[in-house]
Image (cartoon, rainbow, N blue to C red; front, side):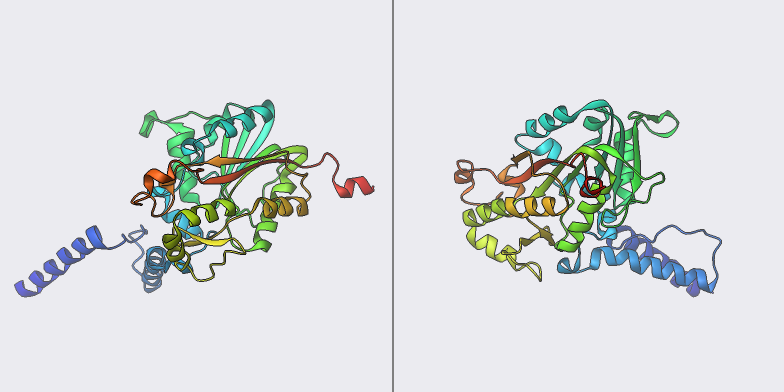
Length: 328
């Protein structure tokens, strides 16, 4: 009897050690569900959660909700903050000041953990934040929209609403959302033009005629610029993901195949989506340290003397009269 108890205690200690240091914790479930069906659900959910971290880098996609949910705790460390870390943030603030109106409503598509929400909240009457990941929205709510903790928690941004939604699907809000301004920062990353077209179509459908749209996308020109400065590293980086194709702008970013854009490419997609020709197209620059391999590069000093890498920052308009309205 004592030996059985000793074996059981030893096994319990081993499980605690494994779960505490080396394995993903099981998701919480109601303790009372000890049925066979409940056990199968627990095992399936545990395996599903583990797959977030065990998926091969090349198999992950930008539109993978589980991947972004898994990033919530380490978002600040691993995801580039275009609002606070760009070298010329004044370009963003200049556009926001240009379109700001306290009588206008605004939509932030792909708001993540809410980096842009405070700036939008002070410039617009109401802000709708959308993201694919509920975990990221939860963090935005806790750290940005609200302040304090426990019973002392108070809502800081009182004109912000957060909703989980996939921009590649229709935005299911009733009544249908119609806003005066929308922004979309590094969200059109899926290396599939049909998906990108769906996203732009859904943004279009939620904008009022004459509304402005601010867009930030990775620059393929910049990626090639980085490649020329770091040729060997760039070639090794290119082989990190299956399906990489420089001509199509499909390059790995943090192990995930990502769409990069020539200026002419993103302009063509916007025109196809019935937006006006961009009225502002500018570089949003960031430090070389954000590029893979350059922090330890022997050419680090030389890199500081050439153009910084950049994303494309674009402002365009939904025409005041759509083609359908013009035909009536």
